[in-house]
Length: 375
Image 1: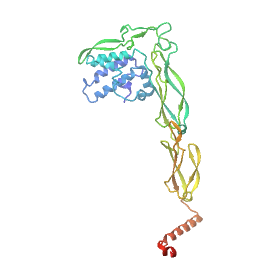
Image 2: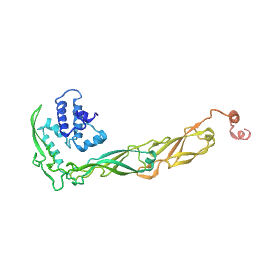
Image 3: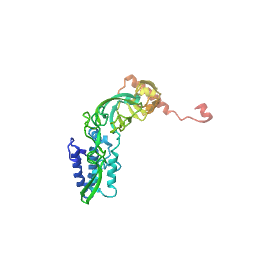
Image 4: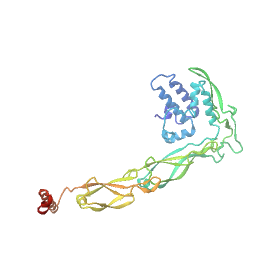
């Protein structure tokens, strides 16, 4: 999906009014009931999604920091259950059609009480060994915390919120709108108080009346043994603080595990290869091999064939949530044949080859009593 700012045709420093004007203009232009061009409906949905994200300061901050991944990743129109920026779309086109006004009013009512803070995402890379055995990592995040100066009220000490003069504290306003379908009346959240019914007449200097401040914070994240790429860890209450006394969101840590040369992971099993010379494969041996626990002794049975798999039990990855239960480390055998032989080696091998050749030329074994006596 295209950049949301580009979709609306505004700069990254655009204010709320500029966003709203751009959204209304483009929504009228690409609404499928007005614009029958191919692709107009998809463009209309993308515009709605872009405005939904950028019109909310907290969601916009996540988008600026993480892009589409920070706001859920799913494009399209806003959720009908939480009107937000979609109320403007109703105002432009659907006011007066079967409960549209009620939907806008419901969106205003939802803003009046405490609002839970947004969840945040942090992508964290760890080593192969750290994923196997677990580790504690110190990370630094940026999130919103309740303003300590005004305790989240947004007002200076000694003052507080007052009733909004635009909506008289109702949190809603009625608007008459002209559309291609005629004139309609829409009940929508008050643009002055954003549906809360209250305004801050004397805002706090520390947070500019928002009740929240953006701060940097160091956290120690406990990563359990057995995690893998894509594992998601939840750190409670370390997302953005809620508005008007609402609970804080959570921090979600998405892990990415680095590869390690010579080792490959498949669930709780670790795979690697070992190379033997032909004498080790024929006669057997004990060799030193690399594991996540360090070097270990691996017995090689006599007569080991190329492609055979030899297992060291309990030297794999712990099962996530049960570090006592570990998988295995499996070694796939490769046999390396010599390209040059000394004269002594050749003579011995030729004798061995001749011995095997004579054994192959012996007559077949005779069965029965006489065969056993005279064969």
